Length: 116
Length: 116
Image 1 (cartoon, rainbow over the protein chains, first blue to last red):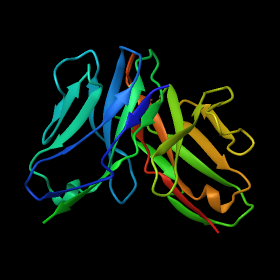
Image 2: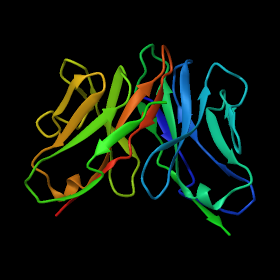
Image 3: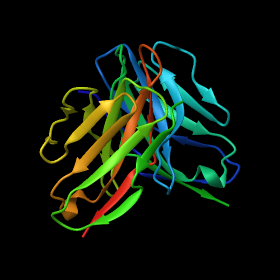
């Protein structure tokens, strides 16, 4: 079974600074997808970024980028120019590469605080 | 991406009663899922809602406790039966969006249930 580990229960960053959230996973598969979701106090799960394992290029979405190290099974999220609205719980998630879409396996989450 | 609406968004329930959560998607989707998020924890998959057939439940979840319906490709319900305080959680509907391999999973706003 796949497992996802987020070793940082809490992180904090100063507004406008950069922060990196860590995620590691364990799988024997070669085809899979990785995600970062953000959950603000409203509790809605918001997709931040998506990475295909077969792509060597790291995914980016505006101020959000990932460092995907397939051999090390590491998938960290970098948030640049942090804003107060970035404060939330961040979850890393793994998805098997199946033809019809499949369930997600989540990490335990990292609570990010942004200090003004 | 799909627009996913859940009702109710929040409710306080009496012990021993049952509550049905509705999930409506604005487009037809193949895969729909129900997740549970207990207080302070990550998300756990309850079941995959299958259109026209019985849901596929994950280990630890049973149909008698969490009956699920999926009458068509845009709608599903989750019932939490005979509730106890341990069922106090956020219940999230999600859908797999896209074609082919590696569908992205999007979430509804969640239904926050408190059992007293």
